[in-house]
Length: 137
Image 1 (spheres, helix red, strand yellow):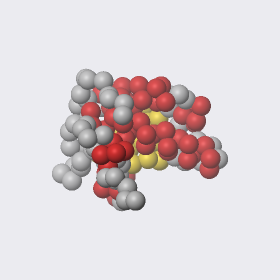
Image 2 (cartoon, helix red, strand yellow):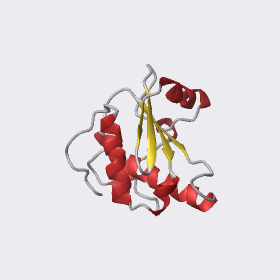
Image 3 (cartoon, helix red, strand yellow):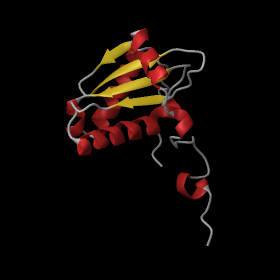
């Protein structure tokens, strides 16, 4: 039996919430540009940096150094950040790429705390955020 297209998993309506390769920063030069532009906001669980460029398009880049913890902790931190980004990306606007540097405290943080902090830091960096609540699928 053939699997149903994305309608079965994601519903017939609503925003596309997949996180494809084209929606991620993969080039080291893009990460370096984000650090060089020096637009950052610091929170308890993460440091958020933005990259403004002609080719920017709400892409995400994640950095989890060994300061975050062992390999399991770093993977858990990346999964939390990707999930929060994936669920809220459709609410964001602007021609900007975002680099998120995880901090040690994110390992024990609740999903809602990470989500609240990410949105707060993005608004601090003047990334337009749609005020409506996200729709859980």
